[in-house]
Image (cartoon, rainbow, N blue to C red; front, side):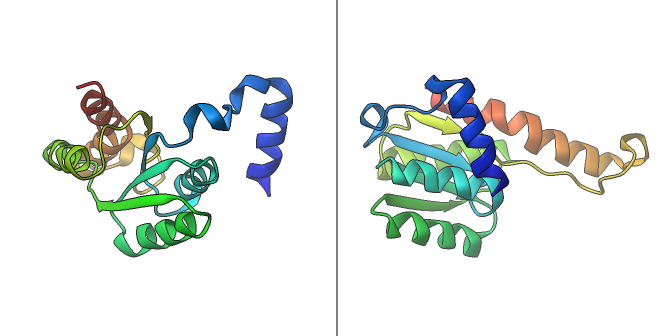
Length: 148
């Protein structure tokens, strides 16, 4: 409900924020963190625009559920289990996607984590490093693969 309200407000204020479906139909769209929440909603939106979806998530079951929803509206969708905190996994999966699906044209870097959501300074080094790898470095690594 909140997402729908936000979308309506954005569409009113910024009418260009909703792409013309004819411009992106058939395009390959990669959504990271597609298994749940906002990532799933974004994937469904692109599915309704007739895009070909590449869904990345660590949670295979949830990612398959997103795929099923997208396919139910007629989209072609591919799922990959990817730990986006691993540069090597991102790079190797990007190669697989290129071979199996084709070139990605639209990237939605949605995956993110917040471990032990408390005072940042009291977090241990492992939690801080994991948060930085997923919330910052993964975006750079995924976008870097997109540009190659």
